[in-house]
Image 1 (cartoon, rainbow, N blue to C red):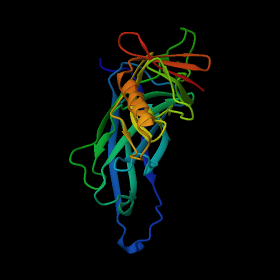
Image 2 (image 1 turned 90 degrees about the vertical axis):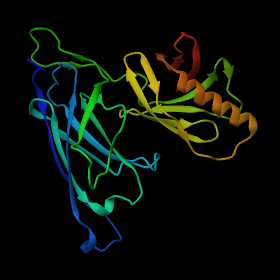
Image 3 (image 1 turned 120 degrees about the vertical axis):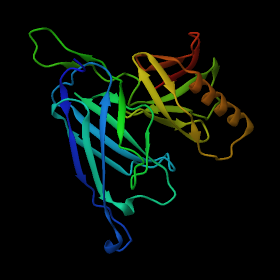
Length: 260
């Protein structure tokens, strides 16, 4: 048969949005969708499905919607319905959905690329394919419940760069890296703020396209910032030892070292 028995979620969330528009002009919108994954694994009890609607035109802004609901018994795909007022959606902006499945305080599944969608008029049925991020261990034969590994040590810390491609960072500059449980990465390049999507699988990591603010800075700091971005883009693997994080290239060379 296909995938083993997992769980089914149905998110039915009504979001109250404060708007300066007259309530009479606001229309209720429902955005249904489904989340699935290809791995043949079962979810542990207590797993939750989280759906975020993000404004990709404003990468540094908080999610427009961020809702979560427990997953009940059933099989994939997991169904959800977002209910909100159309005044939440800003004209001319681009939106996307991020789906994550969490359990035991750790992230199990997530779609690495945000799912682009027109929240007011989807062009096709929404089907988000998530990928395995955490590791699910089924436990011993006598154990009735699966056990979820702890979240990867690289997540949920602010890492301060010590060296970039073997060179110490400039005095009075602090390039930083932080990756949340939703795998949205960001920090400071030493002058400008930067943002990217991270893809994490065991000890491998890849950063998507990096965007940053356009604040003016000195030539030396600007060159260091570009080197920092280049090193992130070339990163292939990571290692945390105590309070030190090292990012390596495909050839095993250390590209970046951080302390927290």
